[in-house]
Length: 216
Length: 312
Picture (cartoon, each protein chain N blue to C red):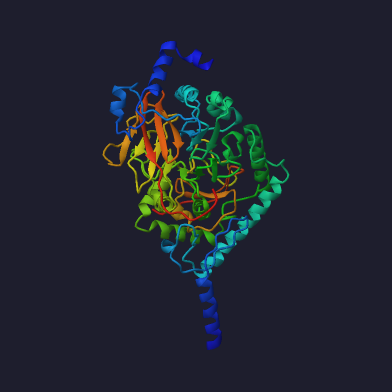
């Protein structure tokens, strides 16, 4: 019994001490459980946590959904003519609006919580409470709310809605991005009012959101 | 042809005179906006305007499609006729509001057509009003990247960042790029200012915490920003020259807080853009308003610290 316990502890210690990797491909791994303090990490490292194994499992469910979303996004986009890296506004607009329409059709039954899963939502909120609970939390919040005095309800913001063209993108400070799970390219965390949205930047649509995510 | 349409012979003479007769050795000037208003056509510090130097312009927060933007664009074309800058560095908010194809025309291609026709290349960074798709727009030369680096001259390298979404991967990329570059001049350009005295936004302390140590460590000499709709040159911070050039399209008049103590020169009475010339270890610059006033000018030297070997 003691041997099993020590093996589990050793395994847990290995996980805890393992460096957090920075990846840039389209299939980020779920964050491992960690007790590392983000405040002591260099800004070049993503440190999601501290996380318990239960929290990590919860975030893994979100990671699975992100992978599914990205796979769908790639599949849908492959049906469109490839967009060159240097092109015209007409091509950009045509491609973007076609992708928006196809993604909306492909996810016609999508609803809040499909990506920010019910298990992951409280963990994301907990991570945000931690980061905004720091001494510089008010500054972080002020940075997010700069040019973001928006009420998501009046915007009728919902899953699959187009991100409003006239609303600027709220800045997400690097200190906040550092502690949130990595996303695939073309997906970004953004705040609209106090909602955290998952923005498909290529399709211009809200893939999912967490309402009242910004702590009071 | 264009100048002939826009200017009378007298006004052409008035424009040419300042470029012809100023002292090369004047150091970074400290005139305030008030002084500039009192003497709108005082002779500026002469740029060397030498044949083999690298010349560029800086423009930010411009894409309104409205009359003031067009008037400043006309001024940019006038200056280009006299001072052949090769590129324009855009520090974000390139298109406000809608970004349909006609908006690219109205807010960018038409006002800057004389420059585009003259072969001037624009290199964009994105602001918080810019859709991510702008990175595919060929006239912004971003090659599909949200952040990128380029060296238009063997001695000069620009680091174009996406400051509204600075993920750790971008910071890691930046450090690697700064570390391996051996260009004499390292210039960073992005939207949100690390230092700003403007009341509307001001200094972005969160970005400063992350980026400034890298700029100091890796010998960045100049940082170009926008976001605040004014022109401001900051007093050097940790040896680095910071400029806010968010005055390209919609002015926020009277927005500079004069009490911050970090302003070297501020101008918040009209739209303005910046031109600069790098020759050897010196960068000459001047800032021109919509009316053709020279509202700031000077020269600064590049930072020199020990660097490890790497690629240019």
